[in-house]
Length: 186
Image (cartoon, rainbow, N blue to C red; front, top):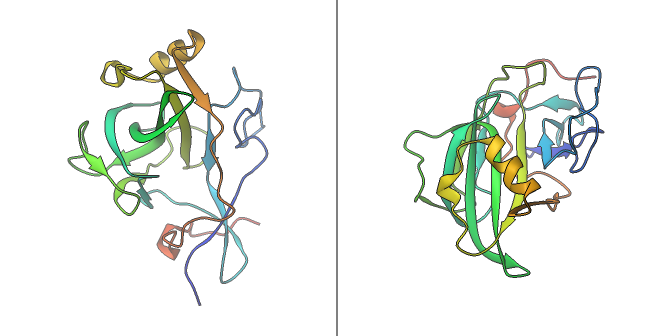
């Protein structure tokens, strides 16, 4: 039997969604800036499960940490990458996580490197990882970012762009049984 599972994107968890995916699925104040990963289908049992707090979160790609700051559930990590799109530098953002001890701006990361763990939720939303892909002009002052209000303001000013993340067909094999919730979701 192999460990792991396939992520299941609930309606509202995808990029651009206008409604939340949890609770009463209320309207969002603005289109969703990324993708939320919470539920997955277990490879072995086929059961729908939830990622639980403490599940390791790897870097998305080779890159360098440029910002770590508080968000409304835990912390957000931003990493820049060598890839560019239309002359803009690409970056990934992992939100609602607890960075590994010592993770700080300037640190280089690779996709097999654990950079964080899923945080326990401090809201009505279940524990989950939010992934955004960002694009900014070369020389963008990533270190100046102090939080989500800065990100959203710079997006409104068109200095920073949220892009639709390419969502893999299934999760990495590193999603292990230790990341499952105790009670399967129906």
